[in-house]
Image (tube, rainbow, N blue to C red):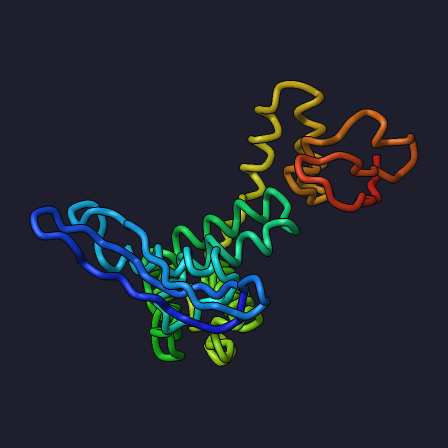
Length: 252
């Protein structure tokens, strides 16, 4: 197929029952090897069941499937479409389950509600900076804002690599000043009260390892008897999410 860009068009047809039809051109080779243009059109849906903007978005997906040519930002590609149809399929293969859960959470809660339905052509530095300023003003922690900013920047980097955008619009977006996250500290007397309330040796051991070795919950609850070889080294071999083994020195 000839690699040429096109956006196609959607028309409203019918008299009594209105319906939408899409049209675009395909290029095939005839028996002599010459490239021949063919005009295509198909039924998209009744007007009562699908809006014209939704039909146009559907048309862009059909064109990409048929021609394998990238869809430009001016062709009504939304950020949500790019997330579902380009970014996730390309990146998710390298994500752990925990990373995927975190990315999905950040996308669903902090990016998609305000930016998901915007076309890529509508984004600029002011809009993006204002979005993160609003997150900070809503008292989200610096960690949440920074994580969301990093994810959105990765999405735009992928859009540039795939030819959907000319430049990464997130490159000059600054991290706004965020609220200070409180880090409460348990009082000494409360620690002793908690220790006294723990019933068995196993639970007391879990408490001591968690407090003094500062292990993660996934490491702590993945411990087995053979993780300790009788020396001053405790080896974390299995976790809820596997990573490289970690070694801790401790005093019995």
